[in-house]
Length: 117
Image (cartoon, rainbow, N blue to C red):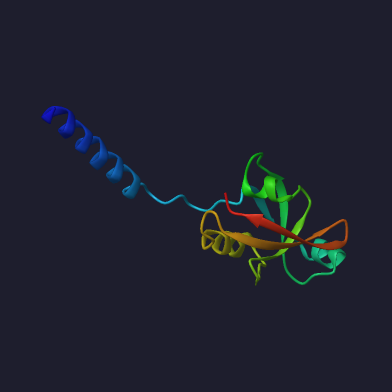
């Protein structure tokens, strides 16, 4: 009986440690971000933004509706003008949080609501 109680207590402690010691997941959009040239931005009618070169399946980007060729000009209310700015903005969004991405697709502005996976 005593050994069963000790084993139960050990399992409880181990499961508690494994849950609390888990490293937090890092935010990832799941898209290839490219520099949008002046020509691309001008044709889209925006001053800044990044071009989506590819989207990885089953990621925040794909589930949220981003597509190759989209031009992202705002993430979570912050204007993005370079891939580095986009990555910095995305990295500050906690996993599980909802946020908006403003894009131009086929010369039409759209707002996509996403959840960070």
